[in-house]
Length: 338
Ligand code: AMP
Ligand code: TRP
Image (cartoon, rainbow, N blue to C red; front, side, top):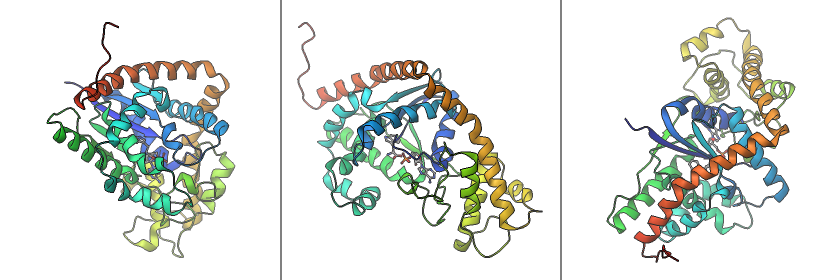
């Protein structure tokens, strides 16, 4: 049986948090043995909002190191930096030319992000087309992402179907979004009604960042917003969003079912206990990841080697796909003998 192909991406810019880990990276690592995987640090996507060049450079490497530290194994998965593989930008242009503008203007992430900025860059609108290419140029069957990216994967399907229909082909594989059942949406600790997000993570108390110290993690959990009750169980009640979020994090980190999680807290004395226990399991889960990250960042050789090999492998897959796409669309190929 041929293995399913998996593609996913993560933006390098700062503040990688517990939601990214539980909703995305940890699952990529857990399922990599059974699939053919491509995991990409999407630095071109980061350029859709203004960036400091030195910081972007540092954070791109740091994110790649974090993927490895979280257990992504370069023997089993291709790990690479998006801008190292020119097929992504080249193919994005081709996809732009078959994607209706209205489809992009409807994206909720674009609407949210553009509403928060005074001047909106063209790249921000085009972001989902670049993402569609990431997925389609690898013939990915599955795209494991958090809930917030589902709409972009659905757009990718629409773009692929439109291309296939326009050129009467089955050239593009139609990918499926794969959303986690647990921790698909980790909420902000300071406000459990909004999703934990990188853009809010500069605000102390909002997020646990993967490289935060144990003291900081404990501090953030202790301040987590809950409600005025004391009952520690999963509840289908918007007033309990804070407690649900803490229990959800605990459940995702420990891998237990809901009943076992509630049993763990049967004798807890109120939310204070809950917060400290959740902080403890998170600190222990992140400890080895932080140690390995520091090791990889201290000696750049291993990381550079993994990324160069990853980019070479990614090019082998995506460049022929983009070349073939150009031909389908009527562009003249380079003559092979000159
Ligand atoms: P980003 O932070 O947008 O680069 O997202 C990287 C990955 O983490 C994507 O698969 C997102 O869907 C996922 N993700 C981001 N925020 C959360 C969250 N609060 N809960 C669960 N998954 C998330
Ligand atoms: N847009 C995604 C995010 O912010 C990152 C991303 C870029 C991605 N390209 C992708 C995710 C391809 C999955 C597949 O989370």
